[in-house]
Length: 265
Length: 338
Image 1 (tube, each protein chain N blue to C red):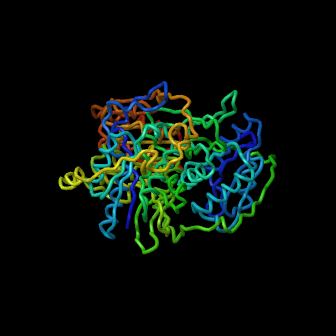
Image 2 (image 1 turned 90 degrees about the horizontal axis):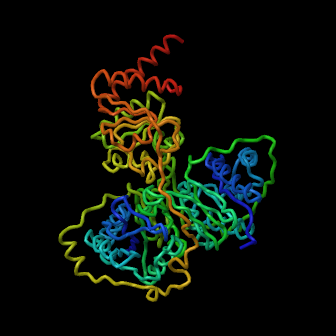
Image 3 (image 1 turned 180 degrees about the vertical axis):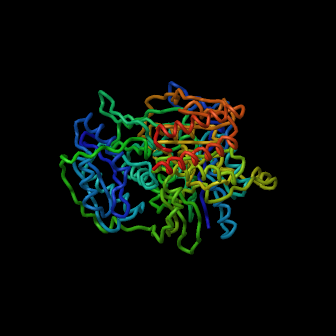
């Protein structure tokens, strides 16, 4: 079973700065990690490959530094990595990103399954996974919370929806996006790290994936960032301190009174 | 591009019943359509009760476009995407708004690629740009640290998803009238490589968290999973659902369906009461439309107090048991006088 796992390198903290001119993130000086929600996709891929054999290829589009994220995924157990890096990809929205990733997946050859994280913690769109499915014209199951069965021509999965779990059978090859219930990510091992360091990591540009230049980067992106604001959410609330029993008593009494006032007690 | 005109909202049905998100979308869609001076259509896929279709018109739709093939009864990505792509090609709307639900967030990216359209996820604000008539889509990004306003100037339709509970449902006006357009869909478009084998309902409490009038939530300050008993007890007393911060879910104290925040569910209850929740930006973004926010936290600097209407800086293991006792006493007293 050959599995492709598209991942994204994201800034670790939420304290990131934006460039007010371009409306893009200032990435310099930030500690970068694998998008935490991609770890569940990586783990599920490794588990499947351990059971069924084949390969797990992590794929990331980003600056050269994104190779770190790929090496880390390989240290967890992914067998191969591909870095998509080219200035022509810069400024891509989810439309152009999913196009480039889909082209790279095509170029890489036969595969049975693409597993994506639910969304990246920086962009927070959750659009690239389904986008890849659309470009590759593959069936997709989103919000997958459990892999039930790996059948010869299909996968049976559970999908988390608002009021429960759907059980779906999805024909292979297919695309899954997974939520955090789907797997318990392992830590990289020392042996894995050594192996990851030694494994060749190809770097592909726009030409290598036979991409239409008009569909790449900012130029290929239908959306434009118009402006960026920093939101403020503040209310002038009544904040009490319950430092001693008397204060505690009074604060809780007033809380009950508050609940009464809004007809909840 | 100028051939594209009119605003669409993508209504949702479950087992033939129109879902509340549809009425929230009508609030958004009506405002946009009025600004642009164009008609508003509600599009709904799958067999739907007639009463629900009428309700869409009473709540603001000028027309309802329905594709009621039985294959569309449940959300399946391929038939839904192909049907919508067909409808978009036929009617050419300039704007499509859908709920940021499990189905909306799946269908819209598939459709955006198919139609070569720009799509913005999880918008909290939608507006029309004065001179161009472009849709301005405002959304939180980078974990809610920033609000980005986005447009798709050169592509149509302009597509956006909107978080459930981020708007009030449009009120019904019994005098409103509108057209019902039934679309027949080519069976070829309704084929699916994904089959729905079954459905397991979530525990009722987790399922209801977005609908609940009261949400009582716990976070890392609970120290261990067993202590969610306090949260459960308080939620039961107030007739509310149980929520949790991402920290608590990541620690395995409670299931992901209970997670509140940007990476979980957005809630908008009458009362959001939380204990041991510090209030990360991601969490605050998921609760800020709540009518009343009450917080208990031992750290006076906790960000949650910045959004709380009422807060107690104290030990939740002292505050919650006392609160539970006092509410019980009050309820007993009320019951006695009735």
